Length: 136
Image (tube, rainbow, N blue to C red; front, side, top):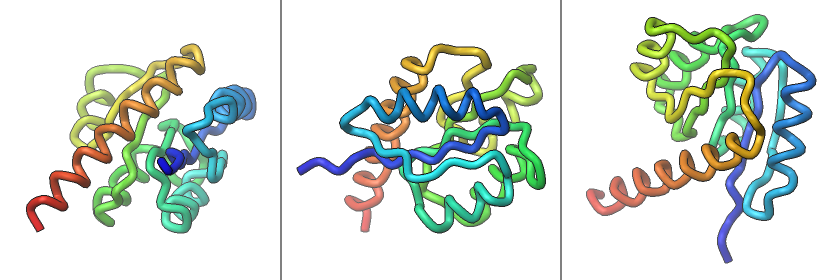
């Protein structure tokens, strides 16, 4: 039996969280394990649940998205991260790429596209884990 893709949402916008949550909830191969509007809480939840995919906005209270990405990288977290943001420029894109994000999605976008990116991110995660397993 195939396990579901576990997803954590970290977005300050209640409407965005509701739309993403609804889209993920309609998918039989995905499970929303947690959601928050706070960067520090997101870090705690990621540590607790170790989701397969994190959907992360860059503008979060208490700990911004780029700082959270830096923390996750330092912890060598295995979650794949999809960054969503209305802020999009070359510097932000470069920083996100350097910090290991799988995708950057500029808001607004349709939630079905997010579902597609979650599946693609998880495929990348599973491939990386399989490659790591072959080397051990």
